[in-house]
Length: 41
Image (cartoon, rainbow, N blue to C red; front, side, top):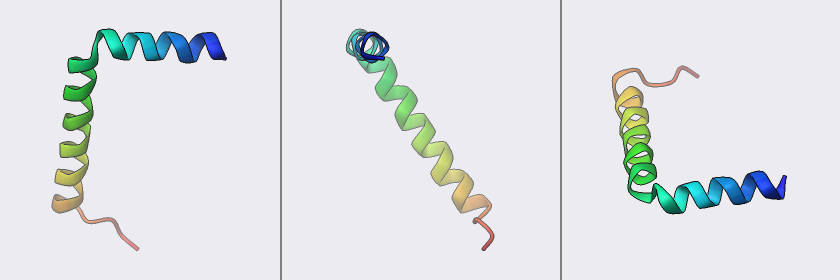
């Protein structure tokens, strides 16, 4: 478990710009989807 966490942290540190870009893209997609199709209650 710790090894997997370390591997993920190391990958994020190496590919930090890519991780930031992916995170921003996911946030934009989620917000856009929520705007286009609001969740039903």
